Length: 184
Image 1 (cartoon, rainbow, N blue to C red):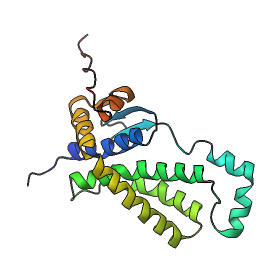
Image 2 (cartoon, helix red, strand yellow):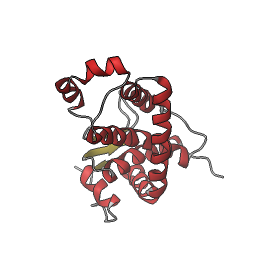
Image 3 (cartoon, helix red, strand yellow):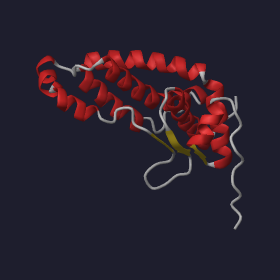
Image 4 (spheres, rainbow, N blue to C red):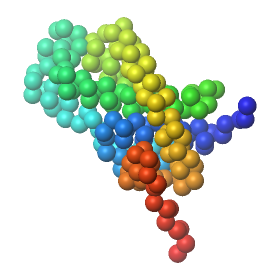
């Protein structure tokens, strides 16, 4: 078995996030494996949880949930929470499928979803069960869309960065436009 490079592993991690974001209906702006001071790779996308906090405050759920342990979500909001968790889990799961020896950089993905699951479920035990269920569902999605994840990873390795339009085309089975020349 060949040794997998860190860059290849990172490309599969970011491709996992990007492909599932597109498949699950989030608008993706960019995906990159070009490192900065803040991150090694990144997918910039719409946030399916945008507005959740204000919705909960509007409904007064924070007060009620504190008494019951967990947030009472509508089916629509629960679906959006599951979507956000699946997109977040897709990176580490794709990384691990590509390189089973790797679990680099996954803490940054797991910490926010663990906190989200805890606030939704109200207890550590319920949150763990919820995350286990989401991980199984997300692994199925990663396996189902593996060829797309590999195509996006290959393009990330080639170009370093992809636009949301290019990601959507690749995920939908069309060719991404050629990279612009960097010559001045």
